[in-house]
Structures are given as C-alpha cells and as structure tokens.
Amino acid sequence: MSSQHFVLTGATSGVGLSLLKLLLQQKVRVTVLVRSPQKLTALKNKDEDNLLQIIECDLLNMDDINGLHQYFQNTTITGLIYSAGMGYFKSISDHSAQEITDTYNLNVVHFNLLFKVLQPHLATKATIVGIGSQASHITQAYAAHYGASKAAFNQLLNALRLEHPNYHVMVVNTGPIDTAFHQKADPSLTYAQKYQSIMLDADTLAKDIINGIIWKKTEINKPYWMNVLLKFYNLAPRTFERLLPKLFKNKQ
Image 1 (cartoon, rainbow, N blue to C red):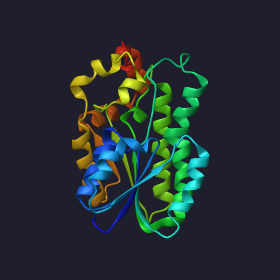
Image 2: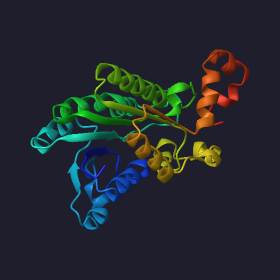
Image 3: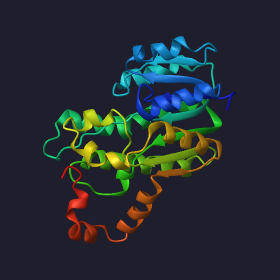
Image 4: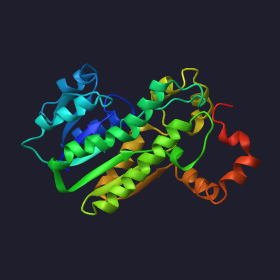
C-alpha cells in the first residue's frame, strides 16, 4: 500500500484514528479532513516521512466540503475512507431539529457531497470504504435516527458499487465499539454500560479493515455472531419485536 494516497475522515478518535496510525505505518500518504487539526499535532510531529496532510474541514459545512477542490487539483486519490459519523441514543421526540439534521447530513448526505467533490480526483480503481453499523439491519427504540441514517448510508454505498464497478466499495457494519462516540450519543452512558461486554476494540477493527482493503472485500460484519443473529431477525422482524420487546430497547 506504500504507493497509495488515501483521504480519511473521522481521524481524530476511535476507529478513524486507529486507521490513520496503521496507514502511516504502512507508508501510505494520508490526507485527513478534520474539524480540529490541533488534535493531530502530536502525530504530525512524529511524521518524519511527511506522509500526513491535515486539512481543516467541518463535514457538516457544505462550503468546507465544496472548497476541497483546491487541495487535490494535482493529485490522484487511490482511497477514501469515510469514518465520520454521529448519532444520539434518545427517543424520537427528544431529538432536536438540529440533532436530526446533523445526524443525516454527517452520516449520509455529506458523504455524497464529499464523493462528488473528490470523484474527479479518484483513481480509476479507487477504494471507497464506509464505516457503517449493524444498527442499519435492526429497528431499535432510542436509536431511530442513527439506525435510519446508517441504513441509508449502507444503501448508498451498495448502489455506488453497482453504478461504478471499477471502484472497490467496502461497507463495514459494526456492533458497538469502545470509543468516545458513546459519551456524546448518550451522556448517561446507559447504552455503553449495558453493552460494554460485547464492545469491539477499535485497533483490532482497524486491522480487519486494512485487511479488507488489501483483499478487496465488499463487506465486513463485526462481530460475526451479531450479523448471523440479525439475518434470522430479518426473516420476521415484527414477530421478534413483539415476542422479545426488551431486546429492541437499547436503553432499558
């Protein structure tokens, strides 16, 4: 992968940060789009090979996204990893209008805008990776907008693969990951505490994603057992919800 150039979002924490470190270790040139560049100052200072480019970009700001053209005019992008995402674990009625808008914009709409801006600079056989969620395959109370946005993101990436078969498009559907995401999604940490025992490790997941890129996988589902159970759930989802309602209320 040493001759490649990846664009990465969500790189200041969690899986995105783990991916950034692995890519740099493999001598991949990485351009990160971050709202707070200072969070990567320490990592940039260790970048002896000058592989890391940091661009200040708020992915909730359309003007920031549209202005990215200037940074890629004379370069080819061989990979795009969209690791940015957000969500709130609260009831539908408790979401503010801003929270709803931000969730769909960051998780779905602005990925599409970013892709449109970067597409002229993508290599013919570029890799596009989206960090999705197992929540896209299940209905959950107190996570409706997060799950719906991830389902839409999943559909978008799968359609992109069909429309552009020359690209390697990989969807990564994960269960809960042990990251700072939960502190904003649910400040009470009720969800995080309930599912702590099954949370994925960000560094391990990042290694699986890099291997998926190398082996040209189209989908990664972690943990595997959760994906299997969700396949059974989707055979008769309303029946399972009626018989086992507590399983679908993630904060109870």
